[in-house]
Length: 215
Image (tube, rainbow, N blue to C red; front, side, top):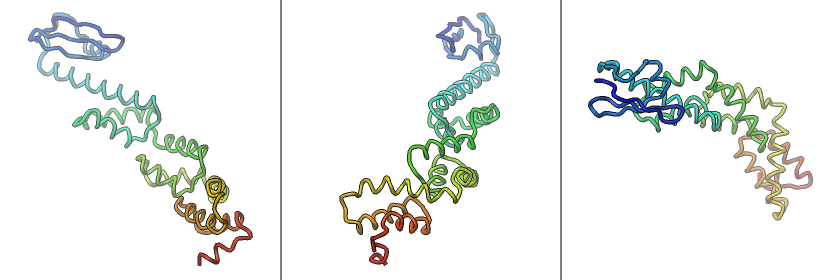
């Protein structure tokens, strides 16, 4: 097949028209790599390589756009790219590997940023943070390691106090015993250890016998 026309579209892509009437949308960088020019003869093998490299470029471009909006874990980005380019796992994997090597994709950095932002918004227990990271595709062992670094045992009580203060604001119309039970249940669902919950309840309700009534 012979190239009969090359037209540029914007800053990134161009259209290659062949003598059989077919048109290929290709990134300008790929056209430059192939040294494509008007009148050039393309073998079936070269044409297949051109299409493959153009698709690989589009996958990488889409990945970078996803990352520009917000950080992603590798698994999270993998799923998004396969939804956008179904059946192209063989091209998606090398793109993810390259982005990892180039520093664009880093699960540890992603997890650290997520934890910092999450704790700035509201209190959280280690169990809750680990679960949220795993839901976002971060490896379990990595999630545990990073959460322990950012939220050691010594910081648990303060996180539980923050969570309790926020919850109690929504319970101010209830009787103290009802507040006690509601707060105990809430902190438990948030994943705080029983010993930490008991201490926060004792601090929050020094004159309430909710603990004895509940047992």
